[in-house]
Length: 376
Ligand SMILES: Cc1cc2nc3c(=O)[nH]c(=O)nc-3n(C[C@H](O)[C@H](O)[C@H](O)COP(=O)(O)OP(=O)(O)OC[C@H]3O[C@@H](n4cnc5c(N)ncnc54)[C@H](O)[C@@H]3O)c2cc1C
Image (cartoon, rainbow, N blue to C red):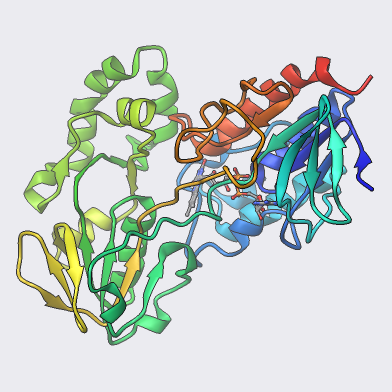
């Protein structure tokens, strides 16, 4: 039988931990259900070289600084240690190996179905992230391609690609960094970029880019982009000369209107400039040993990495919820009340202030909104 509590939090990543801590701080008993065996499961399996692209000072969750010893841009391992410390500091004890299969209405409460870990509560916070929903486009001929085709979420390091010609498809933060990782290891790498991009530096005049982004929030996104444009152009240079197309919308407007996060450049542009990364345009199909491009001749590759992003679809998880998901199953709002009383999402929508920071803001506002809903 499902045991009860004030709130159920699904997921023990940054969003689940921050929300549970915020709820507990307001006297609500939160049960965290995590499908894997540890907190920060997704950060444990990100690629080896990953460091936060946002700076330590602006990436901490509420109530606990990231230690100075982690440096300005903490490594993946530092982030895992930090999340472990966060759970310990706030005495959060998730139920592990507890995948939630569905969240259903149970009278005025919600029931999270997770076998023997099932729980019922008036409040449920979905903090399941996007890692479980890799987007893998279907190209003609993909099945015939002889080499491996893998999603960026399973890429770890360049070792398996030594001696191969590798095609990385997609120029978001993962694609740009994985291409750089391969190039730095001496792998022959091509980056296929279909559309226009926003590229920003990690720092501007020694100040982390997030600090500039936060200052820009004094203005509407479009105006802040206009103000920042000359500085960004100065810092990044004319990306059109490298063969990239600049997005017609600035970085802040693109996040706000389309949820498109800019690429934070940590060396990819230099690698394109000096020829260690080759740029190509849109891929239209595959053959046995090659990729076919829309505007250039087919080329042979030994492996393909799809840095094509994630498309969370929560329809199966939330079969009873009405008016909270888009037609494709993405949450419509995050960090505040939804159309379903007691149901919240945390960290579900990209933000201009950095996702860790946004998660912290949302965790607190969810806890405030949830407080009056606690079990009588
Ligand atoms: C490569 C990469 C680099 C990033 N770098 C930065 C950065 O530098 N700065 C920044 O601010 N943001 C960054 N982000 C974005 C974001 O901050 C992280 O993705 C962050 O981990 C999101 O936290 P989350 O808790 O929402 O999701 P996750 O970290 O994905 O955690 C979700 C948790 O929910 C669990 N779960 C999922 N489904 C279920 C279920 N049905 N039942 C039970 N448990 C479930 C998962 O196992 C997981 O533990 C990065 C993202 C990626 C992919």
